[in-house]
Image 1 (spheres, helix red, strand yellow):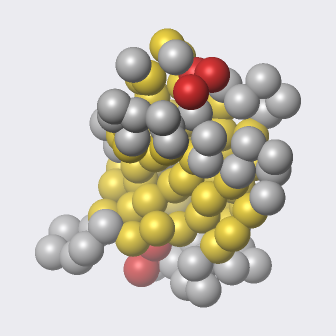
Image 2 (spheres, helix red, strand yellow):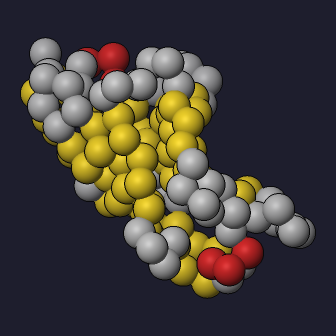
Length: 118
């Protein structure tokens, strides 16, 4: 089993920045990719950014150039640096870990709220 705990959300003005953290514990050796998603009220969950164990990254077009995903060397913590935030970024941000060997393939944190005021 893997446990994920997000932190770093809050209220920020448009144009501001936040840094989210996701700390993993448990069977972290089983984790391959990790990613950040967000879900706003009434909207589908959206994949924002992902990072492989080797450090390769990918981003959704909506956040490319503004958000940066990274992970520490031990793979225990994944970060999402968010710059130039706008009100459309308001959502609950969730950390995801993918374990290819199963039996549980996807783990989720509880989420952290990000609110951007205009």
